[in-house]
Image 1 (cartoon, helix red, strand yellow):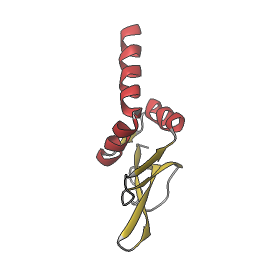
Image 2: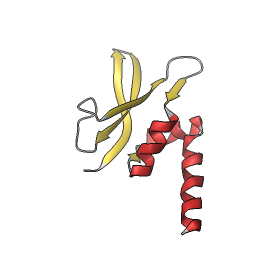
Image 3: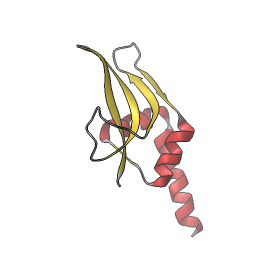
Image 4: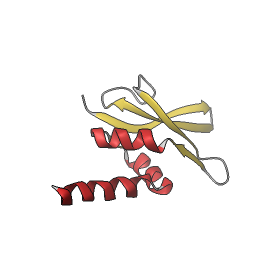
Amino acid sequence: MTTRIRLRRMGAKKRPFFRVVVADQRSPRDGRFIENIGKYHPLEDPSLIDIDEARAMEWLRKGAQPSQAVQVLLTKAGIWEKFQSEKKESKAAS
């Protein structure tokens, strides 16, 4: 089972907000998910990005692949750089 960290669309017509979820890659976009780890409101000024850093790091360590959009959000939240530096340190240690 390949897991992805991706966006799940919520909200009304023309007023979207998204939940950042961990889901099986084969599940539909708005279908079943494993865990909700954050939210993203693109229409707010500035955009609200609220991601649980501990849960996101744990899922990335387990091998969950972020979608392109979520990777951009993780970069803006500073989580992606922490994960990349942690990954480099573990490679250097072994």
